Image 1 (cartoon, rainbow, N blue to C red):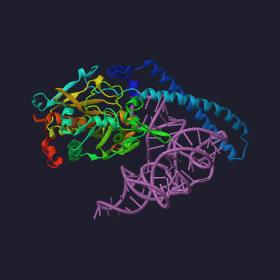
Image 2 (image 1 turned 30 degrees about the vertical axis):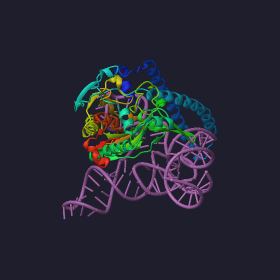
Image 3 (image 1 turned 60 degrees about the vertical axis):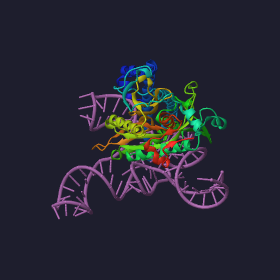
Image 4 (image 1 turned 90 degrees about the vertical axis):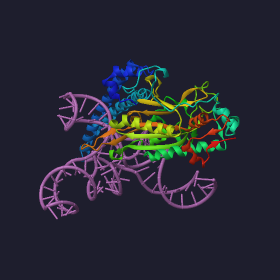
Length: 425
RNA sequence: GGAGAGUUGCCGGAGUGGCCGAACGGGUUCGCCUGCUAAGCGAAUGUUCAGGGUAAACCUGGACCGGGGGUUCGAAUCCCCCACUCUCCGCCA
């Protein structure tokens, strides 16, 4: 959620900034909502002040055994006006709230302006793509090796689900353990959160109300729960509606969870293989920190995601997303893209974002500053995949493929595979 | 699934219709005292919204005692619904 003060003080620049995010800000509506809200608040509050004064008069009279019938009659009448006013207030307030809730975040000044992925900036490259004569893709490799079964997955569930088998399943598990262990050494505290969350949590990180269609929903009693699309949701909401102490900061968490995405509206994309699935595993890093330290934290967190790729000897590049390609809640985002030989291209494997106070406002994440005044401030939140495990699995197969169809595993992974250096059929 | 108890400020804990943003105790901060520490003394100490103030200080008003609704001139206090926590019983990985 944007700070309403930003819209009041810098409306023009904010509207311009939002335009670069493909958001057409309705200035007329906003101005009208602001005006109506202000009026409703003032009307209601003056009526309430009036009522409170009268109530006090009645109290005094009653206590001194005087008759207060006239005042009581008067109060009955004015309290009806108050009820009407209250209703107006509520309706306007909720319109104002929903207007604010569906506005995306504004971008940081360092974010390049652009409409789509073509304006993203490559920041760095690491590693050299392996020279492979006629590379096979991960599906051919995986099926031949007997470690990937898409046909049976679609039988038991449907498309965009996969079954991993034997060393394929073990590789997935090894990757998860390896990533978590490295992040623990980097100072993150591991969290194992619920995989189903309530609507408030989804609102807190920005998935709701706008992206309901991308989520899997599960009825539960009179309400409904949502399958998490990323660990970002439960982990960021850990401290929802809390005021932390500044001495607790920064808080850095990592979490391994399955992620569930309905991928509505992406029917034509990545139909082959396990690049785009309804369910996949991901290790996520999440930071809670003060505004001043946030820019540096984004660099740090991204470097930690990169450290996984480097340890796994996977060539990658870092992209700075342009305004038009960023997610709804993000203030600034780096994508990491891993080299996939079968596609002869870099493909997204991680997304590291700084959200400013956008999520903190939605989720009520604050800290009490260690200043003499000890004022409350909104936290800044950041998170990044480190990494999406399904896509890492793909990258390991494709980059490690040998002429005989076997997969040479990166050295860092060997201990996690009980000494296995190569996957063969 | 059944029965019961609970949810109040940083913490403990009072408050069953008005003078309660909330007693009392602890904590914290500032000042005094003390060779240092402890003890003691004095004072301060919630959040949030709207308006005023160039900003800060501050001032005025509203709201907040788990969440929502109701009764009432007036609700932390009475009534209803919901959520959560704890205990017991049942069932179960």
